[in-house]
Length: 164
Image 1 (cartoon, helix red, strand yellow):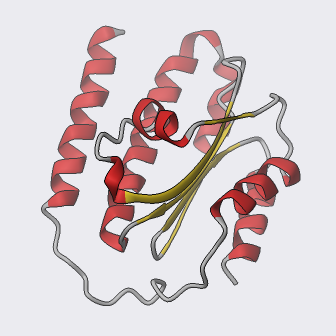
Image 2: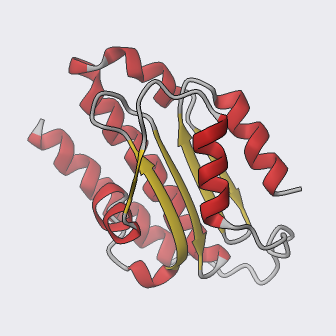
C-alpha cells in the first residue's frame, strides 16, 4: 500500500512538472466564459445530485493541500469542497484557477485524486469504484469541477447550466 501511495504521489509530481513546462496557449476559446459563482455551483451540485453520503463542506486550504495535494495554492483564485465521511468516495470540488494554464495542474490533481481513491476503495469499499469510474471532470476556461456521485448525468446537467 505504501509503495502504491508513493507511486501515485510521484506520478503527481511528474504530471505537475510537465504541466508547468507546457506551452502557454495565448488564446482559449472558453476563457471568456461568464464568471461562475464557485460556491453556488458547488451548492447546486450538492443539493441537485443524489449522494448516499452526507457531504460536508471543508476549508478550501485543506481541500487544496490535503485532498488534492496542490502545494502552490497561489494558482487558485477560489474553491469550494464538499467531501464524504469516509463511508463513500463521493465528493464535490469546484475550482477557479488564476489562469487556464493552472487549470491543467488542477485537472492533473483530479486525475491523481481519482486514482488514489480507487486504490483506497478497492479493498474496503469496492461498491464505490463505479462512481469513481464515472466521475465527472469538467474544465472550462479558468474553472475545473470534479463530482464523484452515483448521478453523473445530473451533475453534468447542473454544470452545463452554469456554463451556458
